[in-house]
Structure formats: structure tokens, C-alpha cells
Length: 200
Image (tube, rainbow, N blue to C red; front, side, top):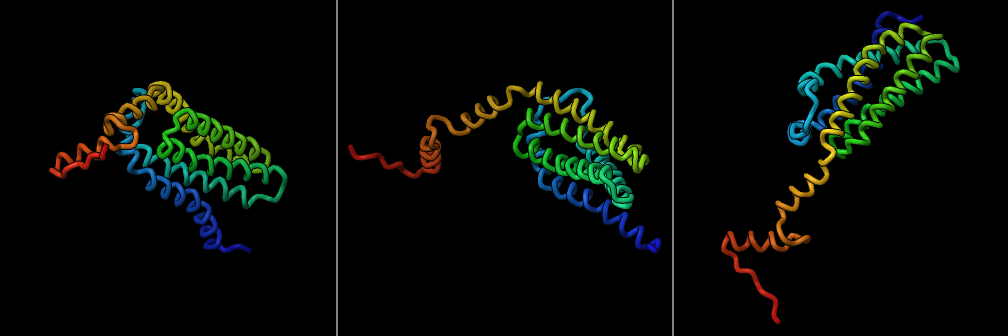
């Protein structure tokens, strides 16, 4: 028979998995939030970055609680399916942040959010027959993912010219010369270092 402390420890272990992984990925993408993300054109309803830092830890707590309840349910095919959807959704959430913030793949990030939503809804539906409370716990996550999908699509549409703009910015930083030779020459001239010319 489980003790109350054992039950509590098991619950916190399930919560700490998504919470710690989410915190790690947030730290990895912190610089992009401050630089690249801040320059994107966004819809009017986009929350400021600190709001995401409040909402996602709460959602990770709900996700961990849902997984704990499923894990403690009697073994069955539906439980396996629900846990599979949960794991896929968690991995999708973590990979989305890398796809969006690190790879700057706006269109791919839309597909990633849509898949997360499918996995979360699948987990909730599979849980109805074995642990209905799980579906209720996941409801805020589903609502937030719907909102996130709207934001992702809107940002992708508003920044459809982003690759061209980034290429133009890189060209401006390295004028005349694909290999950067001209830029090096300008730098040498600026510091007074003579540039050796090729012998004809």
C-alpha cells in the first residue's frame, strides 16, 4: 500500500519532467526571444513574452498531473494510447520551440502546433473511458494550443517575407563579395593595415 508521501513524490516526479524540460528549452531560446522574436510582426492579440513565462509552467504542471493520473490507472490499451499521445504532445511542444525560435521556420512551426493540438485532443479523448478527469485537466492546454495555432499562423503570414529580409540584411553586412573578401579589405583599410595586391 502506498503511503501519502510516496503518492506525493510520484506526482511531483511526473510534474517535474515536463516542467524541467520546458525550462531547459526556454533557457536555450532566451536570446532569440529578446532579439529575433522581438523584431517579428505580430497580431494585436499577441501576449508579451512574460505572459508565456507564466502560462507555460502552469500548463506543464497540468500536463504532469494528467500523466500521473494516467500512469496510476489500470493497465489497458486505451491507457497506452493516451500515454502515447501525451508523450508525443510533450515532445512536440519542446521541438516546436526549437523549430520556431532557433530554426526560424515559421511555416513548419504552424504544422508543429497543429500536431501538438491533435496529440493533446487524442490524449483527452482516449482518457475519457479510463480517467475522465484527465480530459478536464487538459482542457486549458487545448484552449491555449488553439490560441497558439492562431498566433503561429498569423505570425507566419505577417512575416512571409522574412527570409528575403534576412538575406538583404546579411548582404548589407557583407557588401560586394560572397566570400567576405571585400569586407576584410575594408576592415584592414580602416585600421591602417595595407592590403597586399596580387602580382600581375
